[in-house]
Length: 123
Image 1 (spheres, one colour):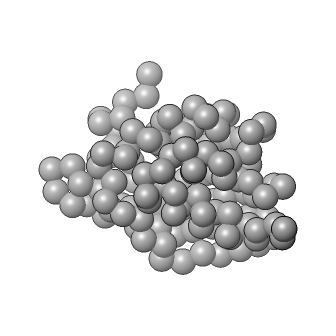
Image 2 (cartoon, rainbow, N blue to C red):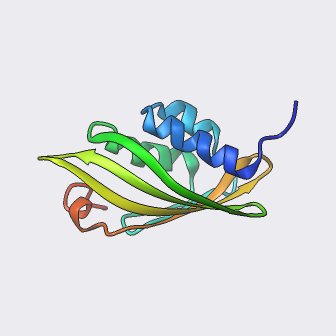
């Protein structure tokens, strides 16, 4: 069996999230040494990260990948995140991922989080 390329791993993760299949999304993440950074949260556990992002499931309409850039084991993906709260909204997101041993070891996302901050208050 051939190992997937870093961009295929990241795309598989994004596809699983878009389908709201968070159990499958977890399979793309490293079991040890995982880290996630965003304007809303910093997490160092893949299972906690999946629990955190699964909260967007009810409002997630779809994910549109606009562009992917690959540099070795790092993948930068520019995404439109379509969500429905009181109306359909599009949030541009940049996701920077690092893949190690066929799984995502780190994710950092950049986006304007003002509309989500009140809904997903971090404790």
